[in-house]
Length: 243
Image: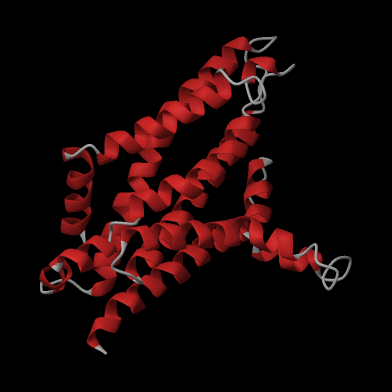
């Protein structure tokens, strides 16, 4: 597993992939949070990073599939998947190696946003007038959300040898699991009856809960369960070559 992990990390940072991903994320977030007035932190009457945690999931919905689309699809397309599976590694080790490499790259992209916290901390009146608990919870929720999206991206990439198809499928699945269940809960058949249960199936409900600074064990279990399900799906798709 470690060999796959280091291979993927080296691939990201020995080429422009890793730097482009981090650069695009930071550029887009910087423009939205400091330049465009509709989302600018400077236009708000109080010190808050709420806009960061509202925009980041939308950006991740497209950025993470762009990272993961090549993970297995490119290996299948070039035929190197056969070389990869001949190594003394189990399929689950290959999946986990690629998963942790992609997740780490996304977390690297999040690290520079801590400068936003320092800036807002100093701009507050009085200085440091921030809800630190909510911000810590939001960062934890964002890291877990990224983990789920990476797992979805790997599953999509393992189902096809076309990177564009893998990207589009991952974006679709990310949208469905993030907002889809919330939209479904508003249908007349569920609204006012079991809409709260349907909402709890979706990611947005649990992400919003953690973002309030309330770290509930049920939310943590939900995220890791979802990650496990999608990674198992990717492993099964990888093993299907033997059927």
